[in-house]
Length: 91
Image 1: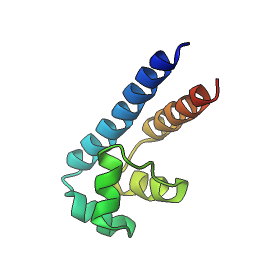
Image 2: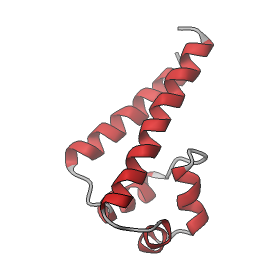
Image 3: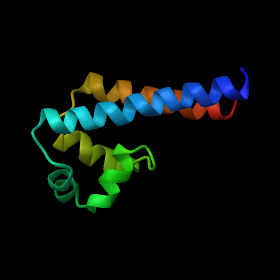
Image 4: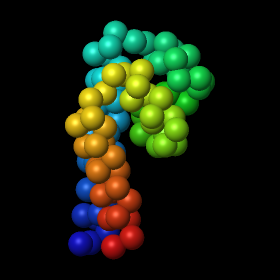
């Protein structure tokens, strides 16, 4: 896989993750500010996640998943995509 293909794959995976988390927040009728308060983080932290500038820590992801009421299937899919993205960085 070329560097360009890796970058495209990473950006599409990241885009999916970002879009899915934002969609899930909206699905729960939560503002970014409400989500940040519920997970004990700043509004800028949530904004950085939703813009793809930051990946949440495992602890923050668990809090986000709980607040957004993500299903086990949704959580495992997001975790697998993140693991795949990490794997592709090193191959």
